[in-house]
Length: 282
Image (tube, rainbow, N blue to C red; front, side, top):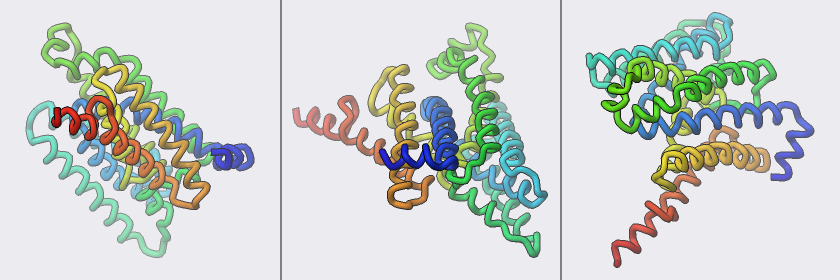
């Protein structure tokens, strides 16, 4: 890790990448707990792919792609929340329609704009955390405060809904508001993740930390701690490995995170494969 810290001190772009990555990973890790517990993994993937349409619109109109992508993703998140609450369609059907339509619109916008190079847009497919500017960093801070502020303000209520929706409703918790808020927070976080690891891998940051935490503990507080540690460690180790090997930063971060998950899957003292195998033999 010494080369990484030396690079952070010597190169501003590495400092921006590390700060932005840690902010995004911290938010993703906390939200990952609810994504895994409430079965919203496919929603995260769907919103991530839907963001491509908004990003394409921003590039085509010479607007900030992250802003248009955010607006697009929030609208998709609200539509998914509305459909799932009113039971008009199965949630997975609504998500599938939303992300495939958004991806198709993005491709159509690009293909019908002649004489322009869309390298910036296609960089969003796989992420480019090393290209985070000071302006991008402030945008990341702003969106992180919005999404993180919601999670912090209503964490107890979200946890109660997660444990037992009927009890939460009996205690006067506004379940509909929390449902919409959670999907909007998910949409904002997805857009930030796209900047880090791209559309293709954004959902990984919203699933792997929470899944790793769940393998390592059955206690909600411990799951959150393990999820947060997984996310933060993935960014630091992934950036360090990327800097040392010249591997793509986004893919390296996701690979490190996945490696942590598989280590937990095998060696977890509670639910690991080795533990279960030993118990079955006895």
